[in-house]
Image 1 (cartoon, rainbow, N blue to C red):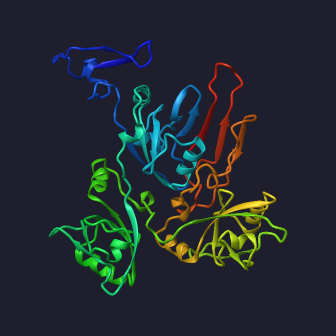
Image 2 (cartoon, rainbow, N blue to C red):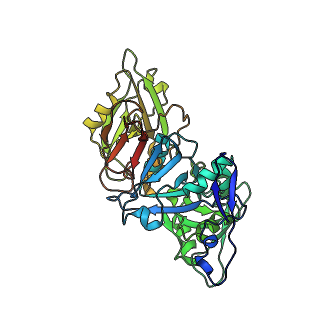
Image 3 (cartoon, helix red, strand yellow):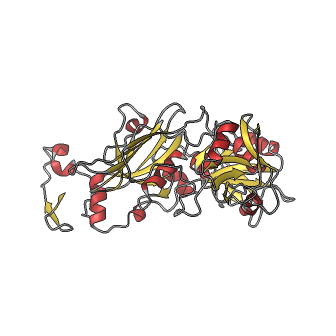
Length: 420
């Protein structure tokens, strides 16, 4: 069945084709998008894009006047996006399991940037998107409720870790967890009956039951599990996608990135910034000598916190002088993203950046969104500082520039464009 939009907007005119077995798949009725409900709306498609630190994802995200949604454009020939199957005109619905169709363009850009070298996208083809919108469909209901695995940090008590592992006889890498109610694993958020995917940052795919038991004993009193419910595991398996910690729900972890917003007082902010070695071996910027009663302490700063971002921009790879310059860029206020030593050590142990999992608690503030040019003003090409190679760079997912295009020509669309 073929559908075209009529002159009266939401009304649809329908043209039917008779099936001809001699023609087979060349029959135009069989080459159209599958439509089981007669409304011309296809199904969302999911793509797990994985790139090297020196690559881009190979597409641009547009916001276009007269074109609804976040639009996939300029797909790089031979790039990651094209190889996986993204199409020009696709509308972006989800980033790493988060529905984004209703979000501001710049917040969606930030979510993709924060994904590092791997991002899971859900898209809908342009025609289906427009049809769904015209029909008043709730696009979020077209997507699974939760497609994220879960990252859990379990601390042993007198009863142990509070879970047991079962494995089909004669198989490797297939482990299901039975969870003791109110035990350590249960309190850490491990769902009963979930499947174990990673142990302390390492895949268990090649482990035997004996090897897994040995690894658990070597973990001491704490263990980090990447787990997925049966429905989540099936979702990825059926689509040939690999589940990794980079896609995980970390809401149950005890380690959180904290946002500190400070307004400078007569005596300054009241802290000392010191350069020192991180647990990763790299050089970082740390907070010390927090003065009692001054803005830094009032904002929740603790001695030993490591600075991750200043005014929404990662400082990964910046030296002390560059970080100081960022802090002083706004004369009377600054917003820092920081993490305490225990959290810093944890994220280093699993090879991920804590910024990757930071969620802005106040979307309206835009405080965790990288500083981007405003919507108004003349066209501009703005350089983005990209940190050295490595999995912990917050902005490595972005290309080396952010471009905002504003046309003065009446017939040309105004659009925002971000390359990835």
